[in-house]
Length: 326
Ligand code: PEP
Ligand code: MN
Image (cartoon, rainbow, N blue to C red; front, side, top):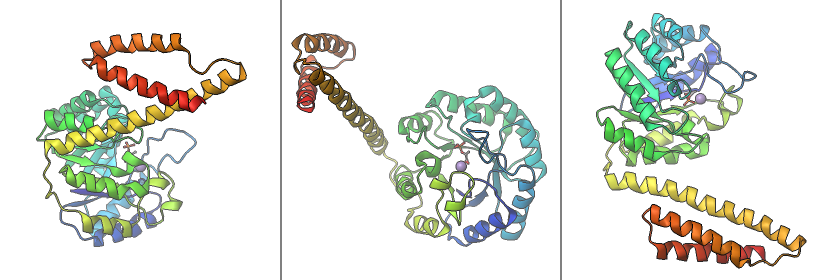
């Protein structure tokens, strides 16, 4: 199942243009057309969505291109309006997903209607338990298929969060949203191939025929041509879904943070070097290094790391710091 379409409905013409292109993309599985009409944006000065009128445009897309349609709901009132307009699928965004009281109120409202399905993104903060709890609120209440959408946090994938969800709720279909995960159209194709490798059950991708002119999320929306390429390369779930593949993805992400942290440490080290130079202080300060060693070696024991390895790592880091300061 793939949910494709622009971040936001901007005009009736824009939706129909994009829907026409998406309806022609070869599809191995169900395609749903997406567009947000009420946009939960960070700043009140940016485009907030076209509002209720957008539902009428989505109705036209549904009728003219025979595509099921989806929109984002952030309040029970929006659920009522979307269902009254015949919207097939509703999704709860990352900001809504951070608030369990709101999720419960939305779940109660959805239970009164009959959408074809409900999707919920992971919360903006990395909190697998909150995401899982929200899915449980929806599944107990809604009597409709519930899908999880993994969109990462702060443009980091957070594979470990999705891994936890997969293990806890293996029966819940899991989709990847490479657009919000990366915030970068240039990274969408690679994330789609990782989704294949990890046997995700589908994708939610932002597609715009004129991404540079988009009123929201302009940098991350791909064109219909780029979408076609991605769909051609998709293996349609032929992958292994091995636990090892997941664990390696998680390891790569931890390593990214680790190496970025080392680079940040060296940056601070250079600033300390400049201060020492300006104030006539020796680069090597044995007492300070002894303090750091004592603190970290005690920490190593608490964290089940061998003292010997931690000592070697500290020596290596210290050597590089000295080099940076000379
Ligand atoms: C969206 O899908 O356009 C959206 C607002 O996403 P998220 O909730 O993941 O930020
Ligand atoms: Mn968006």
